[in-house]
Image (cartoon, rainbow, N blue to C red; front, side, top):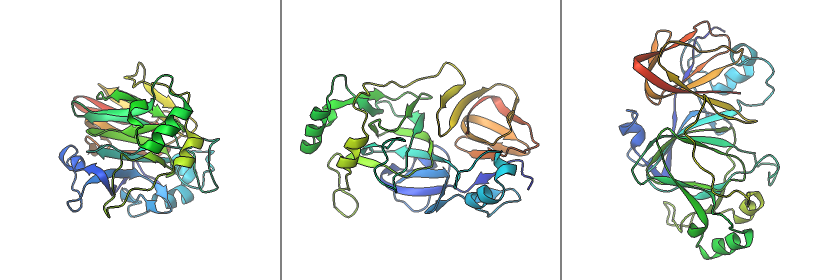
Length: 310
């Protein structure tokens, strides 16, 4: 099944903490007028499915492609039931809940899925930041007490946002994305999130949002003190069990696939062309393992892209 590249229709998710920056910053047409917090750019889950929007496979789901053309389009040696990477764009106009994901060893029940992710900060307002990990010397007993009284804020490590910085969020790391951030989030294909605290916020029906305190306490790494954002010294941003993410600063043409496996590209800045198609800020396209088209070409001088694979 020949295909030079695949693009997918995004799935927009309303969130009480979301906004409309997917429209104002990326130039997208959003549904309705409610706040949109997430765009699921690439997903293969039972309750959410990416559909190919271009190529000879137009209209086919990611799961169908993964099931029927796995070796041909993605490469050899993969035995996952579903495509194992989930890619999102987040627009946080308000702070997200304080949460934690289980790691490989902390799955709470048969339905829980381990989850690691990386945040790449595409844009940030002047005072934006994120809560990541704990302040030095915070003990578990201190944290448990603070959760009960709703006073966790002073125990959390605040990290000011910087454009084009990133941080890895392994299972067990406390985190809350702050207001004013636009983030590319690349994660394992998991939707297991344990909400520790939600700033005493009410949902759209006027009720407190559900918390998962007991599950969270079993997952939190209480030795994770004051992690930092990174600007990166080399191309590789993270390599973990679930994915590999590299950042390419393009000043000239570059081979897209030098390895016999797929590559997911997201345009951070600038414009790039691949084959006869141009891609701009926020666009995602998947280059199959067997693609015959070879080069990404930057326009207007330079471009920045993230490349994700297994």
